[in-house]
Length: 130
Image (cartoon, rainbow, N blue to C red; front, side, top):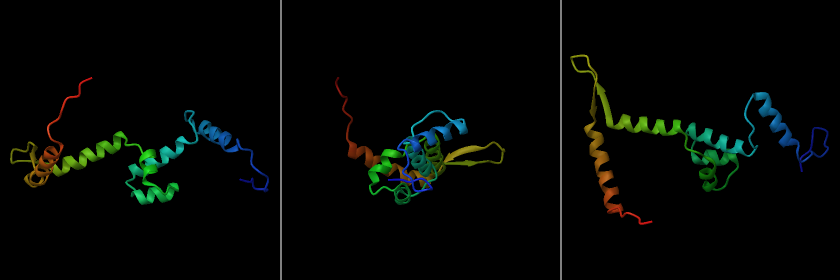
C-alpha cells in the first residue's frame, strides 16, 4: 500500500494519471507507464552498462528479464558495426594523398579461423520445404 505525503492511501489510478500528465506536459505521445521500463533498460544497453548493473538498477534477479526488456536499437547495431570495421579495416593515405582502405592482416589471422570453425560446426545448410 502506498500513501500520499499526509499518510492517506493513494488512489490506485494516481500513478496512471500522473504519468499521462507528464507525457502531455513533455509533448510526448501516449504510451503505457510500463513502456518506460523498456525504455530505461534499453538506455542502459546503449550506455553499455553491464548486465549485473542493469539487473540491480531495474530490480531484477534474473538475466531473462534483461533480455526481455532491452531492445537492440539501430544506434547499437551501428556502434557494433563500427567497432568490427575498426578491427578489420585500416585507412591509410599513401604518398599520393588519396586515402586507401586496407584490410588488417592481424584481423584476418584472428577472424578467419573463427568463421571457419562456425561454418564447420553449423554444417551444410539445408533448405526447409514448406
